[in-house]
Image (cartoon, rainbow, N blue to C red):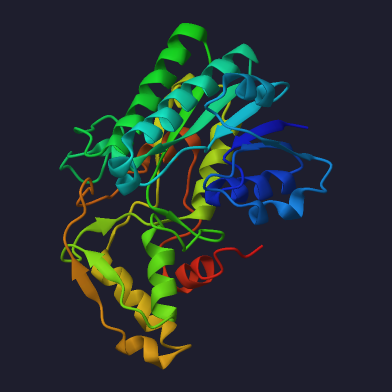
Amino acid sequence: MQSILITGGAGFIGSNLVEHFLNKGCSVRVLDNFSTGHRHNIELYMSNESFELIEGDIRDLETCHNACKNVDFVLHEAALGSVPRSINDPITTNEVNISGFLNMLVAARDAKVKRFVYAASSSTYGDSQGLPKVEEIIGNPLSPYAITKYVNELYAGIFSKTYGLETIGLRYFNVFGRRQDPNGAYAAVIPKFVMQLMAHESPIINGDGNYSRDFTYIDNVIQMNELAISVVDNNDAVNTVYNTAVGDRTTLNDLVGYLKDFLSSYDDKIGNVEIKYGPNRNGDIPHSLASIEKAKSLLGYQPSQQFRVKFLFTGSVAFRGR
């Protein structure tokens, strides 16, 4: 039985990984301080004999060492996300995303885990203008958050070269799906817009709505994490980073249009909700479109879910669905 540590396992992506790997027969340990994650995301698994929860903070090295004991793989999801949060509070973002990340690398190295897979970010591409985004070509970071995620990649590379720790970074592109929290100041755009429309409130689009994103359903992210811990006998496939996306892009205007059209079939008043526009948000990348050729070639990745309204609704409205 494989033993997997999932940091941030009570969060949106982490709890979906917990469910998946428990269903695969793995032993799963979660490390979470519940600063952004929720207990209700993992409450169903608390009685599972293959599940263990460690409540603690990755900023504490001893906690990280305890969490890494006797595990085969680490899936490191714990972080403070959100570009605006990092602009408002760069110090805490740095402490969690860089110091906490380094603690986890040290603990994984000392525990001799087989592989350390971590959540990287498409924000690393910064002001790079090229589309689609190719892993080896990045620009200058546009936010403190982007800096922290790039530093993660640098640290992972050093630990691979210096200590022989196998690492794989997954650059997530605008992930959405079940258990995504629509509340809070830093809620992701899809759940936030859905909840606003359902309440007949006007969504506010930053800018003119022509910014585009490679919206990526949670099941594709789960697939990439599984491939990342499963790949063997391919030295080119480890100690590197991969775009984790669909390879398609949607403008924010189109996104809201899709949401209004689909939700109107359940509540015709939604079709009349006004869309409002605000200023561009500091630190935002204008356009995001991933090349997924590297993941296809080296990991055998084939996104199981494309960006379609039929699953956008079912995957995103039941944010806390079990």
